[in-house]
Length: 157
Length: 155
Image 1 (tube, helix red, strand yellow):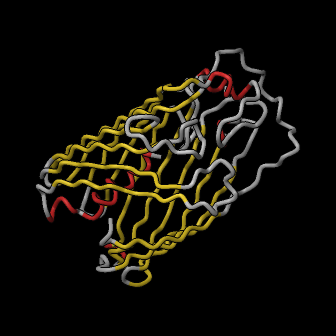
Image 2 (cartoon, helix red, strand yellow; image 1 turned 135 degrees about the vertical axis):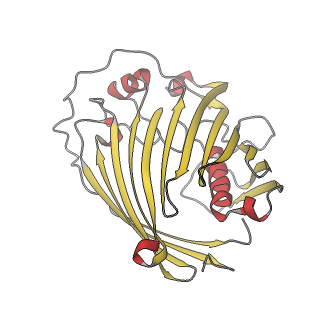
């Protein structure tokens, strides 16, 4: 693909998102994303089509109003020409396995964000990834992670 | 990069509820990034400053935003082009907030355009599935960790 590089090539995309409160403590969200899929993937993520949705609950019901529990499902895919490129052994900036048995990538993610102290938050996140990097010959994998978040100055509480 | 920068800035503002505190605020931000010369692990990285510019007009029920950022001269390269509107990324966002039966909600539409020296994928027939089913590399789980410190006065 590097042989086809031309100055001034444009890559474009669009996205739309909905956030909706259901009750004071519960909210749902959904997001859709799309890009042209034929130009070279470029930072951020090698995804051409994206749909995700989930639900978020704050911890008021269990007397931890500054905690948040959430779960979401994301389905992502790539364009036909993009899949063909990877299947022929092409390399993207973060993916490329020498071959590809294409399938949409499914990521189910759940996290719990706990306020440890005012201004200090810890989040445990667990992801289950099916067809990682759009390859049915790979995975599924678990991806746990831990995140620490510090807010300086006036904290939320 | 521009899209991610911009989304982070807007998302953070939305979560903080800035609009509720000052519903008619307009914002203009210039984000500078200084690439240091001693980052030897990136061979092609050219030291020097680069930039991103974000602007948003906010009212009680809507928000319009625009951002532009420098991009590498070659796709996925590390040599940023610092000339305005040459090898750059642009993003536009419109947001509408509403309330149904006292339940708040928001809809956002975002578009982005990126220009650089970039290649195109050529249409060819894919290989059959299963070619790398017995690939030497094995699948594995991927634990990770992340820590951040954010000064809420500065963003």
